[in-house]
Length: 213
Ligand code: CDP
Image (tube, rainbow, N blue to C red; front, side, top):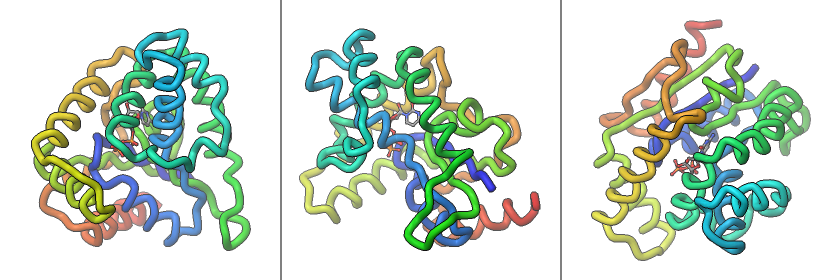
């Protein structure tokens, strides 16, 4: 079983895929973390928008980089969307993601039934043959409010208007890039979550998956 979940920044992909992974016993990969780790590494070397810098960062990515502090910060998110617009970077990262989808690692319960991946191009590029594709969206204001609350819960300083601007900028960069732009696959189920809580989104996703089986 492979479930592909795509959508813009802070649309709730992480919450949904955690629930799906638990429900169906799947390995879960948040592909944004890979781009964030490359973005942070690129920031250490130089300008993340510079192809040579970004490619060097992507080549040197190691598993341990995926759980370092600072990955969730908006600075990492911005650097992620800069390196993510560079085709050579996406090429380097594609193999890892496809391998995860087809040979998912065991989770804490042992062998899994498949994989759930979330990102921007899972249904369109990474796993175009996935049997279940979801595209999760919400208005930018709702998404900014969710990210604001998430930061507050983590005890971090946050300014609403700055978060909204960052989200709008990042979506624009993700949608307008020439390689693997953020867009729903033609066969994806689109769920607008603006007026839904996490349980309602999960129920809608389960409903779609069972309608396809
Ligand atoms: O958590 P949030 O939705 O804010 O972002 P994320 O999923 O962690 O992704 C960070 C950035 O990585 C995005 O803005 C994209 O530019 C890039 N990304 C991508 O290009 N392709 C993916 N499959 C995943 C992330």
